[in-house]
Length: 134
Image (cartoon, rainbow, N blue to C red; front, top):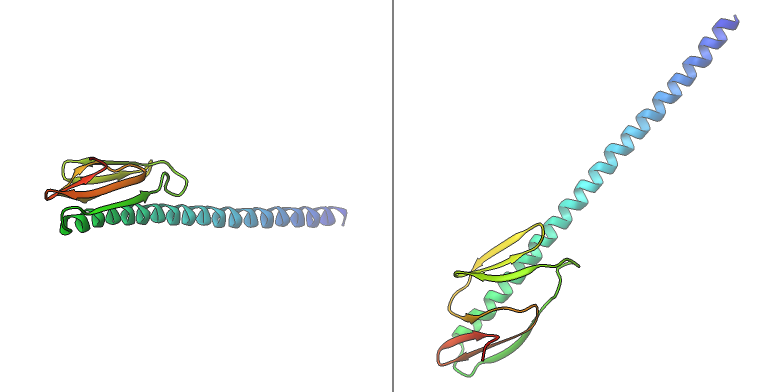
């Protein structure tokens, strides 16, 4: 009888440990899924922000190209994207915006100059669009 009670207690302890293990496994898998989902959302948000910024800058050049000589406009570009540093450059006829994780390219033509983070000046003089150049 004493042996039966001991076996019953051991079985209950074993089942309890198994239950705790299953609960921890469930929470581990759930936590991993939540972390992966939040990373995906952050990645896509950064991708969309780069695209929006690139298209906005391209639109500035298109607008200035269609304007008459004497056109002038000052506009701002943020210093950071979602708190992260980024680079903006011109490679051939492409505007390139790069972060640590992403790159965005868009074709942009018919201008001379470069884009700065923060304040930029765009103007059209003698049929040429200048960005941050006199």
